[in-house]
Amino acid sequence: QVELVESGGGSVQAGGSLRLSCAASFYRSKTDKPYCMGWFRQAPGKLEREGVAGISTLGGSTFYADSVKGRFTISRDNAKKMLYLQMNSLKPEDTAMYYCATVRCDALYSPGDFWGQGTQVTVSS
Image (cartoon, rainbow, N blue to C red; front, side, top):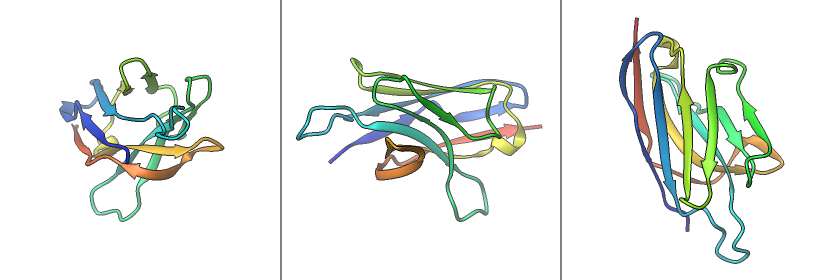
């Protein structure tokens, strides 16, 4: 079982920044290797969660959705068991519930088995 707890969401004006954090017990219990991790979001009124960013076990590979490239940065600190999403130049269309999740290492945009509870990000114009 992997426990994921997000924090750092809030309300911000367009053009502002937020940093999301995810505290994660993201080491596989059997192999002691860290999971690949990612951030997803679900916008108001939408049923599907969009893959925003993903990162490999040691951070050497990353994925970004086209809509956030150049504005968002995903990072991880395995020693602290933390995952981060730095969000700059925020736009109203970034408003969503943001989720931390494990992802497939061969497809960093594809969710794995474990999800956090989410943290709300609201961007006003």
